[in-house]
Length: 331
Image 1 (cartoon, rainbow, N blue to C red):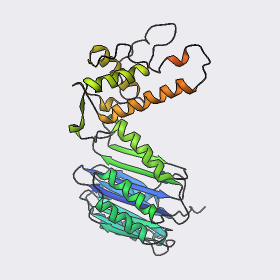
Image 2 (cartoon, one colour; image 1 turned 90 degrees about the vertical axis):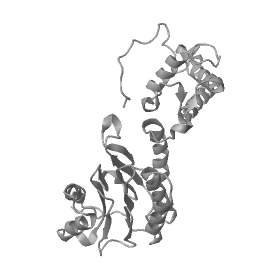
Image 3 (cartoon, one colour; image 1 turned 135 degrees about the horizontal axis):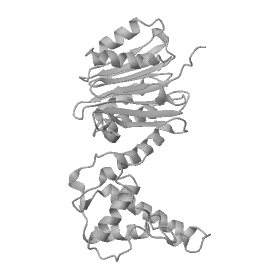
Image 4 (cartoon, rainbow, N blue to C red; image 1 turned 60 degrees about the horizontal axis):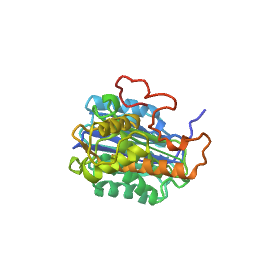
């Protein structure tokens, strides 16, 4: 049974400063993240698409591990493939050298553009403006590889993207030891089926960035005192974590309440021991407290008193929940 063709636009890139390699991709094809992107820290990144040869991903990484340059990887894989005229491939190697290939029989419009540390490629597109916009945007966007990959993907869509429409998108970036539990999988996000997959990918990334990454400028942390302490005490009180007075004095009760909130909301990556708080966490807490206040205001109670208890409150009819051993971020 022949494999289906699918139109796709993608970018593979290397961030020399961070030591990261990644792929961003969108397609009118379900679960494109399960087919196109491959990346390995210290090795490189690969996008295999059009009439995608899945083995290109594994074979390319194997060659890259041997130190093979991106252009030679593309040449070797396509030369050995009888179906190369229907393939598209983008590769960036450990040194940031990039190369791309578009088979002569890829469905129009199909093509690629290679730049310093990246390669953009696409097929069944509105036209060459898609990959051109991706390349120019990646080059011009400030920030690290994550910001630049997402910006490039959005730019490609603004130029028309896949001419059949949108369905799925993915962002996969590898960086040594930077992922969950010390893995190399720094960011691995997928939107398998959505009417606006790139915007949905960006929404999910914003939450992932807030929860799991440490990309904020340390100079922006705020001391927990005065108005900041009062705001924390107030919002933790609304959510049921803090039962003390709103004094603005940051004491052990406030620290314990905030620590429990951090743990239950998977913010261990943002926990600090110097009585300061990241602005992003402060804003998230504010939003959660506002949502809780709205819930109490708008929801008709079923159990008497149920709406007066925040999600961090102790269970009814008993004391605090049993003490649990320290844990890493829950999944």
